[in-house]
Image (cartoon, rainbow, N blue to C red; front, top):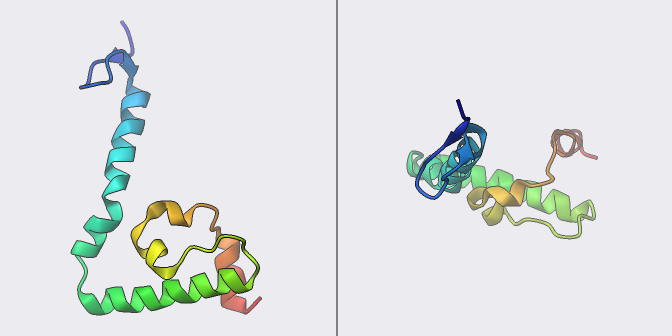
Length: 93
């Protein structure tokens, strides 16, 4: 029995391959879906917090700082932002 499956454009792909493609597809719309379900006030508050994070990253000397808008709308903007960055922000480092 083969682990290969056939899903539109994934002929011969494994279940793992198909799962990775499904994850990528779901992630593309994750932020949009989340924002559609929220009212304006929580999104405004969240944006202010994300702008604070962006300002902190820039002040900390990060070469390419994501903006608050990028952090709110593009999952890739979070790449490289770690728990340690949040901890340092919360204690004022």
